[in-house]
Length: 472
Image 1 (spheres, rainbow, N blue to C red):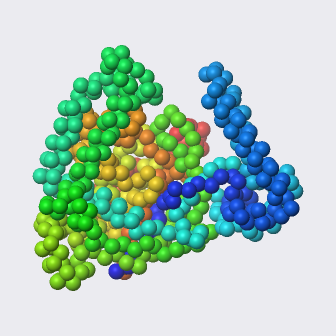
Image 2 (cartoon, rainbow, N blue to C red):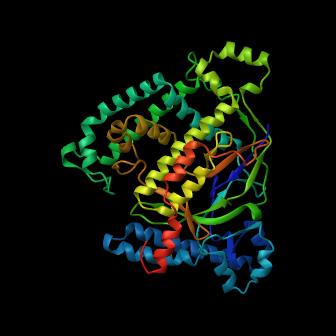
Image 3 (cartoon, rainbow, N blue to C red):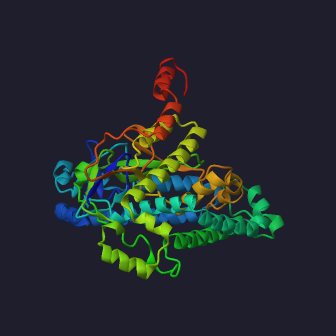
């Protein structure tokens, strides 16, 4: 059958590429992207001037980067400021302005142009959305990855044997880590993880944290292998029960109509910086020609595969597409509850309202998924389960298996917030629309209960407080 994905919040699926201010100009609240060969062709007899300018500016940047590295601590701030000033003027638009190049004519050669949802400086790097021939799309692997995470959550939540194995592994992990636990807690919430602590014999805290992460990653891999592979072949991907879940890539969309540029910032951390992305706009619809599960095979094929692979009876229940969608619904419900708890504890009511809106879209037959940049970590799946079933183990172990500082309770401590069209939101939320789905399904009792519990109108309260000069 075919299906659609509706984008609910800004979505970035990266391709590993970024472009700089040398590849675009900003004009009339749009970003115009250019391929280098088109620029060289357009500049004509000014190409030599352009190449010379590129070399001179690149040398200046390299010179000051080295100066920052060599500068004394008290001088670094000033040298870094000079470096940033040079970078800020190293962009395509500046060259065009200095050389009387007509921007209107240049814009006509752009590969594509995107609306700006937030202000961007002319020299910022921008992370590209995955495309084919400048046309954005969603790979089927993104959807399959989100489904895999949701099924793993369901398996571990509802299979006591699997969960007991997970808990036992984490308990062993904790016992091995216990000798260092007090030392790590002694430096929690400190940014300098490279500092040396006398009582642990000069062993760096960062090294301890790295070891914890590696061990937890191995535990996660073993967990996934046991949950998805048949009993006789736990380490062979050929025997993965989702091998027969086939999802096509989406249709190709028009960049100018589908994408926009905005930025994300870290939330609940002392460091502040902006990272710009090409985002698929909320409301965009991506169409997929095919999703096939094991149940779509004919009976002879199913029997042969069952005989050969020897999946457990529980594993076979996940061959049904309806069961898969139910898993996605349950996992997204848990994830949304976890995220809402985090932002409520940090008093960000705008994000809480945004998450409530996403939650209201979640249906068993048409679930919400979270895909894209920085989403769907296996560690978060484990974290949700342990937090739900064994809060003390969660506090004693899971919150210390982060790459950086050891946190107090909610894991992870920080988030990324997208600034889009003057509003704050979280990224990557999409809605799965099966073939023939109509937006008439009633809200479940669980969702109704959640809706009734949320504040009557935080937006109204904020508006009143602003009107009468009160701070939020």
